[in-house]
Length: 288
Image (tube, rainbow, N blue to C red; front, top):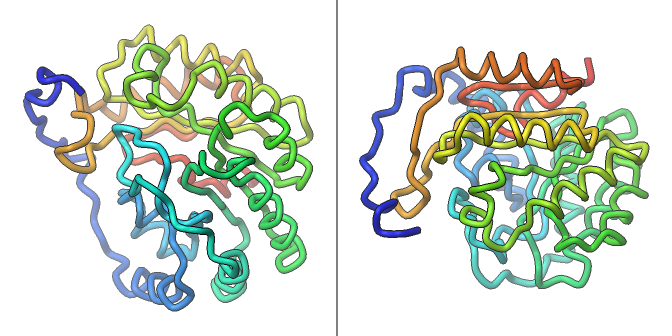
């Protein structure tokens, strides 16, 4: 991030981004279960604004492969650095939580683990297969990293037959190398294309508010539609700390409604777009 960006004037959050927390009791119950089983959720690690609503409904997006990411994306609040070895019983603890929480729709994601030979794809597959045995009635969505373009690794996840594979683009093409310096825009699109040609539903998401133009957003929508991505989430970027990329604009809910309309016309089967939308927000609704 250059000096000009660091000195960008802080924008005041608009009223539609002020989240009430009316679910204290339910939140405490879910957090207690997660703490007891020593599990991480992306809800907590990424400081998601919908944590109260989702925890209150008994849902959570589980984080596997530890909680330290090998990459340093400038919008993300997940810890980064040198990850610890993967706990042997991590998946067992996740399965125990799923049973205890009586979930009907499960979302599993991970930090990026470029230090692992297959990026953790084998563990994703192992997790999916075991979830099928423990909760066969559950729908399973996985939110995966790009595996550094290792498509045989992706095939391991596809072969485990989750219901949905999500891979987030996160941002538009011109900003991609700045915000995701270890990623590659074209590799991410190719990964989504390969998912879409399988029997698994392809899903992606991105945030706006980084400083992108309207044309940038429309091009990203076109690119995702071109690879037959079926489901899409669009949300407002909110700066986690002053060390992260500054917010250039807070989009009005009406602007999100317009983008949803455009996306639907492009052929997306299900779209969630709004200031507080994140990649797993209302994920189960697409199944209704």
